[in-house]
Image (cartoon, rainbow, N blue to C red; front, side, top):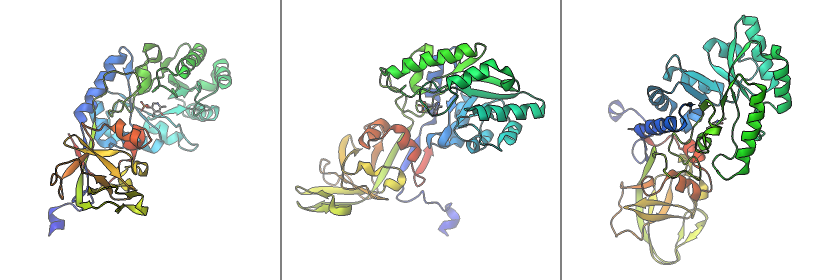
Length: 372
Ligand SMILES: *Cc1c(COP(=O)(O)O)cnc(C)c1O
């Protein structure tokens, strides 16, 4: 009976509620556009739009005027394509593995070429097809992750036939320390980028991620590539007004109890109550993306009162100390805040010893997701 009335889903009952504010996402995108104008803002929607569901996120950005979308992997480009305008460009940051060039060209997806081998494969295909094929050229300005070295760039610049089938839309690179405004690596990478740009004077630059956008216009180039700032993360340590929060998470209480001094709490008895405590067990754990590193660290919040996590985070639950709340305030089925007005995504990430990116992309599949 129930199976007929309700779509069968894990995301009912004791699942947490993940709310994704699409109007905040839109506002963040428009703010970034205004910050970088006359440069344009792309959107980085890799990893399922940082875990927030690319099928919900991409159409909102597209409707806000975004026409450039970056993913990491080719499969993500295919997944994204039906959710954006026909004229939107989709770029694949990690480039193509051999064998995928033909399919990519046919579908009009734009690879980032990170090595001479990728340049050669793309150029050969273009010549075989008798058409120019679009691409971005990435240079390694100091991160040693992806992109052509200076020697390789010099080679390309001096042998134009290596690129004669390629329509280079932008030359790009990526900042390793843009979230730390004072890091000398930012200026060093900017200087390296200028050297690469001198080799390719006719091409526009695509350089800044979220952090780079707030480091000044000399890093903007023609197209910026924000990710985390769209989703409400803090792009850099110097920005005074935060981005609008996009994600909030509330989870239900599934049991409360009062324990006497000396009680062992959770796996391995890693926490021992020093005095009588009131505890609540919450229906959320590391399988939902709350890292196990939050064991005995970090907290949730109720009525603005901080409720510390005690003992180990379990797969499907964790235990918080609710002694600072009035007795009876929390009962079975009440929700507490994990991410929200009293505890930001960044706060939670800091307590877990990680970054907001990892929290977002790890958010599990069991939550009830609500898009506003
Ligand atoms: C992930 C990524 C971005 C987006 O970075 P944010 O810090 O989330 O803004 C931009 N460019 C490249 C190459 C990336 O890998």
